[in-house]
Length: 121
Figure (cartoon, rainbow, N blue to C red):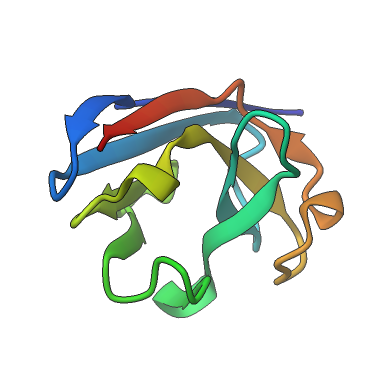
């Protein structure tokens, strides 16, 4: 099994930056997709960004140009650099793992516990 642990969330002013990290343990070998999702209170979990083999990436339109997803050389940690943050970015951010490139949360089998990001207005 795979265990994912997010960190780096916090409280930031509008226009500020945060860098989220997701450390993976367990079955970290093989081909897989790592994604970031977010969920605000009372709303559904929505796709933010994904990265997979060859360093290929994909972003939700709402974060394109502001957020950057990456992972380390060992491919056991994934990052989400968030710049120019807006109040509407406030949510719990989750990292997740899938064997399929997808923007659908249900396609991701493994999830972290989430880290809170709050952007003040």
